[in-house]
Length: 97
Ligand SMILES: [Zn+2]
Picture 1 (cartoon, rainbow, N blue to C red):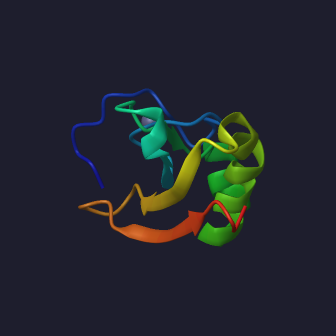
Picture 2 (picture 1 turned 135 degrees about the vertical axis):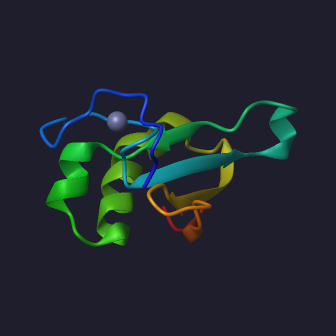
């Protein structure tokens, strides 16, 4: 857990937060787009509480986000945002979604 908490989240907070959300999702954008920043998203804390399984939680995020970037990414990486070092949990390729 982080000790230098810089947000005002509580156990009632529903929105995504870089400190508190369980999952960090990065869309790795196609190289053909040139040197652009990969979009980063955090899971909604309401869904963090609702879905115990990280894959189900990630699929909820994908359902919202994938259409924003469809055809523009080649991979999606999902990280554990609450563990030191933020280890990667799993990846999706564009064929998976
Ligand atoms: Zn927070």
